[in-house]
Length: 298
Ligand SMILES: Cc1ncc(C[n+]2csc(CCOP(=O)(O)OP(=O)(O)O)c2C)c(N)n1
Ligand code: SF4
Ligand SMILES: [Mg+2]
Image (cartoon, rainbow, N blue to C red; front, top):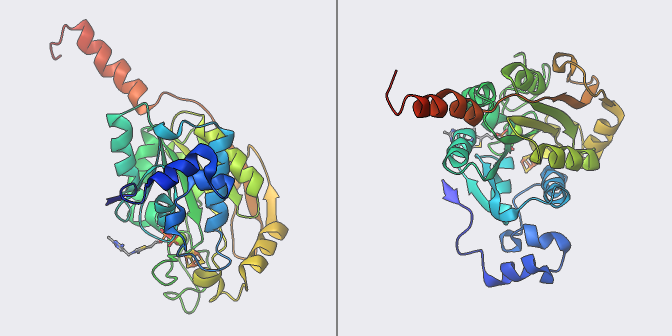
C-alpha cells in the first residue's frame, strides 16, 4: 500500500491549490504524475474529471476528504488526485477505507476502484460493508473486464462478450452491480455511463453529501481491454453506443436495471434511502449500554 501524498506534494502544487494553476482543476490533481497510464479513448479521465467537478459542486472540505483505490487502471485514480489518497492492495480498498472511517469518523471516505477489484477479489468486503451500512461512498468504474492485466473476464463481463480468457464468448452470468448493492442494503445506488458526464458529476456530488453506504457505478469505455476483442471500435464509438443504448429509469427496482451485450443500458438513481449507519448502531447498542451499566459487562 502506498500513501499517494509524499514527495510529489510540493510547494508548487500547494500554490496550484491556492489558485495559481494553469487549469482550474490543477488544484485537485497532481500534474507531476502526468502523463497518466490510460489508453487513448479510455473513460477513466471522464470519471476522474466528473469526480473533481463533484468535489467542487458539493463544496467538500478537501482536508477531510480521503480517496482509497485498489489495484487496476481505475485504481490509479487515487494517485492522480491531490487529496489524502491511498493506493492500496488488490481488493482491499473497502476494508482500508473502513479503517480510515472508524479511526476518524469526521473524514469523508470515498472508495474509487474497478469492477474486478471491488467485486471479484474484494466482493466479500463490499457485501459486508453494505450490510453494515458503513459510512462510505463507493464509486466503481465498470469496464466489464480486468483492463490493467490484459482484458480477462471478470464478474461483470456480459454473457457472449469476448475476452482474453473467453475466446469463444463469456458463458458465466455476471453480477448486476446496482442490484447487488441494493440487495446488500446500500442507501444510495446510481448507475451512469461515461457519456453522462453531468449526471455522473451531480450524482457524485449528491452522494458525497449523504451518509451511509452509497454506491455509484460508472459504465466506462475501455477501447483496449474490452473494446478490441469485441470489435466495438474506438472510445468515441463506444461513447456513441452508450448514448444510443442508455435509457434513464429513476427509482426502479435495481433488479430491473438490466445490462446485456447489445441490449439497453438502464441508468439512473435507483435507491436513495436512509437507515442507521454502523457507527449509529454501535453508539446506540454499545456505548449507551456501557454508560448505563457503569462500565459493567452484561
Ligand atoms: C492479489 C492480486 N491478485 C491479482 C493481481 C493482478 N491484478 C492487478 S489489477 C487486476 C484486475 C483489475 O481489474 P479492475 O478492478 O476491473 O480494474 P481495471 O483495470 O479494469 O480498471 C488484477 C487481477 C494483483 N495485483 N494482486
Ligand atoms: S485497458 Fe481499458 S481501462 Fe485500462 S487504461 Fe486502457 S482503455 Fe482504460
Ligand atoms: Mg475493470
